[in-house]
Length: 174
Image (cartoon, rainbow, N blue to C red; front, top):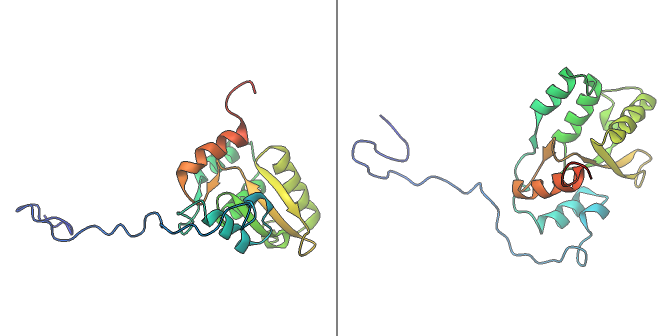
């Protein structure tokens, strides 16, 4: 039987497994909040990547989107198909952690009517699935949206647990 790392018959190691796609180690040459903005204050993707890059070595990986939870929410009638489409689009295009920085017009292919799109965004915010942090700073429709970390996370997954607890609270009855 062929194994690219080990000869099963002799036990000889043929090559080492490439682990270079792990955590990117780098020297921290800035202090978040002093040299860079805090992530919650960032209005551009570059500023956000600079701020979170000092804290997280896994930003080079693609976002982990919880599609099964989105599908379950639609089948249980907790979300409409369009609301699920909005969360899915935002999740696939996060810059870092659970931050989407972009424009509302980028969502036009899901819902073409801007009035209805704003209604859907307000409904998702009311349900606690997104938080609209900043609006209209560069363009009229510029937006910074945080998506629930339960649905998406881009970066070090060990940081996600704390963010979920702070998003939803520490437990029942809070």
